[in-house]
Amino acid sequence: MSRTDTLLKVKEAEAQAKSIIEKAEEEKRLMISNARRNSVKRIEDAEAQLRADFEQKVSQEKERLADEREALLKEGLDKAKELEAGADKRLAKAKDHLIKEFERTIDAAS
Image (cartoon, rainbow, N blue to C red):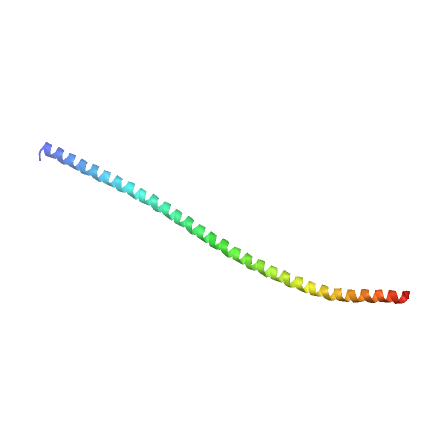
């Protein structure tokens, strides 16, 4: 093999090596770009899932609090009705007592 053939083969091998390196660099850039896109998508998906979970939990808590509020209001209304009924009974007794006292006062004065 002549020196010229050897140099041509060396240049050819260098060109192949350069081409392989350039191709590998391009693949590396593509892989990094894809990895970045995938990581951003995963982060966005995770954030969306967190927001959905948060909204669901907030909604559940609002419903629980609304139910608790309704129960407390019903309990308060029931107690108010009981107190009102008791007050009506006592009011009738008080009226009778006042009328009797008034009548006794008038009878005593006559």
